[in-house]
Length: 325
Image (tube, rainbow, N blue to C red; front, side):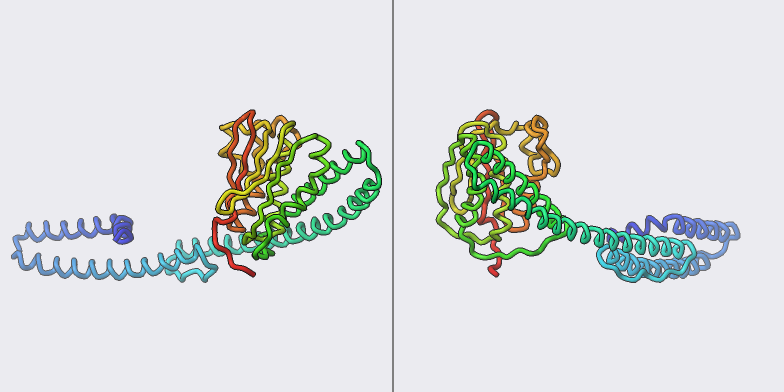
């Protein structure tokens, strides 16, 4: 009905012209004092004929409208047209679709090449990092511990680059299965052990002692980023890791906290907030990647914080049922 009303509105000029012609004829018949039947009969025939033509044209327009509506979602053939102006528009749309298809193909090719390049770069850069770590492990000094901490930070940045590219490229290499949560958390804690010791921060870790349905590799990245942020913005005090029912992983710190005006935007890409602007190393990418990974794994992540008291990050691992592979 809405479409029919829109159609009548588009044909309003022709309808008014038709009625004007009818009024002229009726006025002429009245001037010549012809019988009413001589006026009403041809007028009724003209109205019926006009309504019939109008309905046939409406059905044709409706079919074309449905085809064009489907074109928004699928790469189908453009409908045939009969007038010159519509043919011009049809050709313009065809050219635009062709240009868009070529641009999309170039973009996908460039993205695939970039992912391949940085994947190779990541694997290559890991070799000197591993070599430096081996050399430093034989020493036990304040300098070696500081260098090991810096190497760990470099490894996390390298991992962030690869994760960013994979997510942008629509990565689908998820292996969802029952995963021991402690087997995901403990390797991450070992990465940060030197930093906890050198900065004299207390770690309060309560083993989860349960299994969750997730992808261990991608969840490990989320835990790593959350713990990295907790350490970055906790100059003193402690960081705790615990579980809340039914299956929520909670990472709490006693750091500087997040201002209330920044909380709604902490998961936006490139948003660093007040703390990030004070720290030139902040990129505003880590938490947005965590949100993207959690969304794809069917988990939810949320943050509560009080400035000057600390921040709590909750990762709900029971948000959605996933298929076991």
